[in-house]
Image (cartoon, rainbow, N blue to C red; front, top):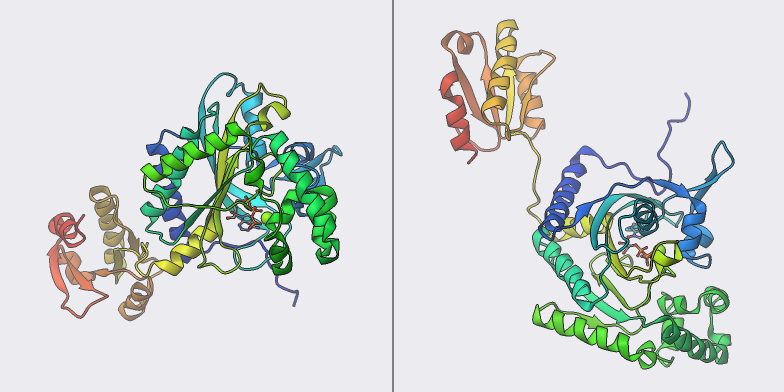
Length: 424
Ligand code: ATP
Ligand code: MG
């Protein structure tokens, strides 16, 4: 026998028993975003490789080693999007959405990075991304953080903690980078291979190292906040004051940097210690230089991305009572006329009560085998039809999740009866 085909490593199937949780999270995210006036933009999954090289930066982990890049049949180099900001900015410039206008946008979908798969880290994963164009002040930074805090509340999540930093302006970052490089050069023998390489290419990323030896070396290193320019410090102070006023707790983490080149000014991460090593569920910040860099008019911008797999993992961990999508009713019907009646009756019930989940048994079989399937479906009640029930136009209604008697309900009375039963 041939080997059965398997999904690609790090790319997951989301099975029916999981998908309702995804829908719960997605609809929560959507409704919170709508309540702030954000509008959805839908973008291609594939873009020209050049776009990601230019926007994310040649010397980032993503571009150096994580992209799914291929040439198409014309020989053009294309890449499966590793993140959504680049494509969103590209689309906004292309369609003239951001010149002199404010845009509050969001998108959602799969992203692709060739990383080592582990819990919370996959090769195809899903993000909700939010981008705001045309606003420079700390008020919009605060709005984004209030929006995310509201989202955690909406989903019932706790223990997601906000970390904040400011990367300052480009000259401030450059001065800090020089000081950092000088310090690390003086301790070169303590650097690991990765950090040594980054010292040449992208030294700020060393701050992000997960290696404990590097972390202890960094404890004595120069701190970015000592190099901040006055404008950035002021912006950051205003943001902090606004968060205090909104009672949103945060920790200033002077070593917080972002992996992508285009960030400057405010950066943030929402982190939990309940997911093991992959604890960042949401990350973002300002990228005021990117729009111009990609050929648009200079436009301030800020955004973030949520990792849906991590968010859902957290939800599963924290909530015992998750919303379920089990059927309300499973229609059991024995005999030809009862089967015909069952199909019609379930149509009428859907017409009257469109939000009920009603599964009509198909495929015949004995009462016993139909009840087994009803039970396995997770339905709360079975609606039972046999020759007698059809003749008397009264269905049997049998609870499947509790010990109590089957009762008889006239066909015409069913919508009313079920509405009360299910608090419809
Ligand atoms: P990390 O430091 O965990 O690699 P990152 O800085 O590469 O994260 P971003 O590019 O900022 O991540 O992506 C935003 C969010 O998307 C992350 O905070 C995380 O929740 C999620 N994410 C990123 N990469 C993956 C992945 N490979 N698998 C699952 N989720 C991911
Ligand atoms: Mg990464």
